[in-house]
Image (cartoon, rainbow, N blue to C red; front, top):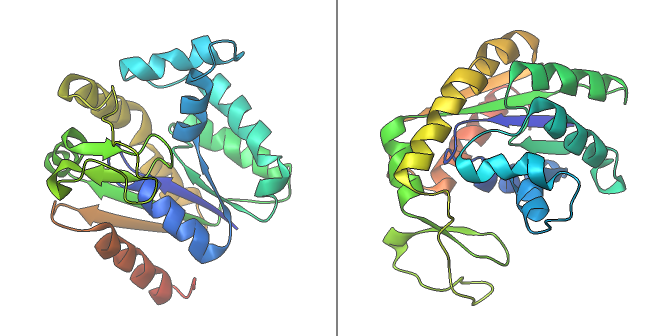
Length: 218
């Protein structure tokens, strides 16, 4: 099974991606994680191309497509994949269709987290993460250390209002058209409108699962 998650930065794709991947027994492939690993190694062949992430910009379609295609062919992704952060453009979505078609597969489910700007800003400006396990927390939780790894939590460099707004604009221009594309091309398209900042990850997960049960997907 191949699942695609859509949504702007801070919409909860990473958190929900791990939950849903476990639920369906598929691997969780996050392009954000792949890019961060690349940026940790200045000798990586894609380092310069991925560096634009730190400026709040999107990596070129060509580079992302090559990174994802290489990943999808790895043994760990053989049983299916939940894609988090890819595709981000219609061109990438079409490239993904070609990649999967070559494997005899297709996108089975698309979950679109349609989150309002106010909710996104509140989430991202207060977001802190564990540098080890990448678990996400919020300053409102009043925590200083990861509850699992016990290491100090950090704030990502790109979680500032100027960069966040740039990322929103990039999403609006380049990624939002995917909603129209997948409503036509996906086997199943689920759209969740989230306009309440008090919703917990569990609340969102429950809404996703209710939709999937109603559609007899689980």
